[in-house]
Image (cartoon, rainbow, N blue to C red; front, side):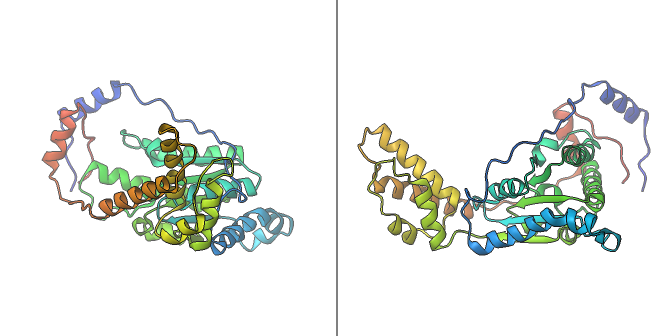
Length: 315
């Protein structure tokens, strides 16, 4: 059913156009911060990543020099989705892939491109693709579930329309983009099936196994830092921790030792830091979020409270 546009709607729309708009978003690629020599991952995960990276590396030879693009028209398009628990090295791996390919990385976070103005978010996404192509950079969408999540089936508000518009534009851009795109997410279950089909490879990042934990502890506990830490003991005692947890524990332990004017970093300081991390994770796992349906009147009230107007849309 169509909503009749009233004179009040037209006046509100006119007022909206007078408000200052957000400055245009620009995208700048950067040099990758990590290489494969600097990240510690289970060998099986690293092998899968290298398989995909080498596919991208050899695509010019296979498709252009050998001419296979004539019969494999869509195979130059390749996406890789890195998914798994927080702190397991997904973002570092994205940088390492770009460095392996000898290219810069253009990292995009949904919070950077989301706009409160209807229709602007899809434009920002398009700009990101154009910037990556113009600079021959690897396009990387971090926290990708925010942009690749399921589309709204029962649209009832302007926000729903805007969400679906953004998803549709993203699908179109992914279909047309003949280059390498990397996605990373902690919540792969939120992905829309249409995006899942268009991403050729999904690689799970798990918590580090025993051997990886030993390597991680050795990497962060430098010989120049005086300590009495037993790395094997740490690696065996704490198994449900990520690489990020390990790096944070070492750093916090070092600062505690410095604050207390200790001659060495005591292993108990590291134990305490890890125990606090595990306790916070357990507490967070017990938090439940209640979802509730809100009325259109409620949404309008909130918009009006903050001096905003809902755009006129279909219903």
